Image (cartoon, rainbow, N blue to C red; front, side):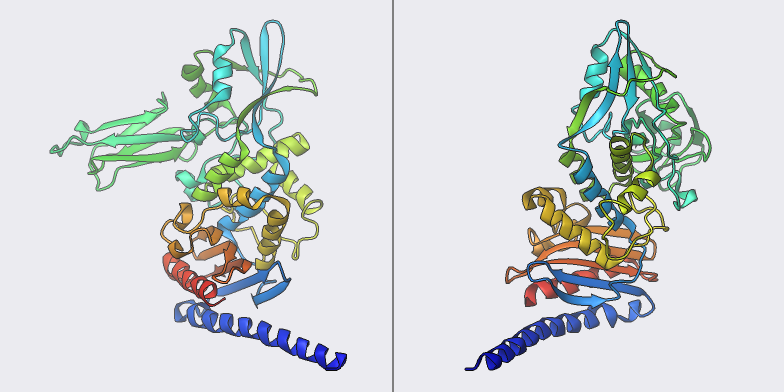
Length: 440
């Protein structure tokens, strides 16, 4: 066979194989997503890419901007992996003969119930010196740009600050005396215990609930019919004032504010292994963790905890070659000002895969049946690792998929402005990805 004939046959072969994959994915997508009558008016973006060959398997609006919800955490994750090292700094300080001067780092695990080992607490409890703190490195606001203001009392919109404690929430628990219809017989307690104002609704409702006043730490408690229920309610941080108030009983000493100028070189008390925090953030899609992690990255890289300055720096530095420059507003994805494209997420996922060990990434990401994927993708355990994203009318999923024939794909699927339940959208995406896995 002449060389020119061989090359022509080879080109036809590649065109045929590429076209076959595209055709199959087209069919499944049209069936489950693009031709889904409930999503006919939605804005849909899909990008599926095979990094080993550089082949695009599917592209539908992949260079268009979408509100990605918690898929934004993928960029926070990448930033943390690049910036924070193996363990996070729980507190920085310098010491004199009579005093310790603290500089908070924004560590979200300080006294957080998920992290029972507390090196910073143990260290502070051991000192007999006076303790002072200065939070002049804080340059952000408690709530992020573009957050929904009326969600202030819900657990997923916790305030940010330089010295978070207890996850910046109060856990309220109700224990109802079985057989009693008198709300006054209910036992209600908080963790940690607080001296802030509490108001009880005299009438029992069907659901135990606690709502905080918008501008002060006053909590209205409504008794419910549940035998046992715990809910988390964010408290107003007032900078670090609320944290210092709550720490008195825990540390058995008082930490005082200081306007002392700190030296440039400080010692560090390390807190938790970084990957344990990132895994918690990704498995639980924890907004508070994501926000504080991005602020910690800013503190380490820039010397100040400013999400805006950190994002601007990243977009002009590590992320300067991103396919479509995003509108990036926060670390968690709570903001509807966030605008990214599906290609952006595939790009950052490929960078993570190239720059960090696969075993490390699969320990951080949830797989089928885990975390935010608990009720989804159970047939794809250890074959799919992905991050969900959910806001009202917005649904996203981006991650890694290894097909039945052992082809590793990177994908991003974002569906905006739909009018159906997010669970229905997630099931449609699940059927589509299961077909991609099965047929390839």
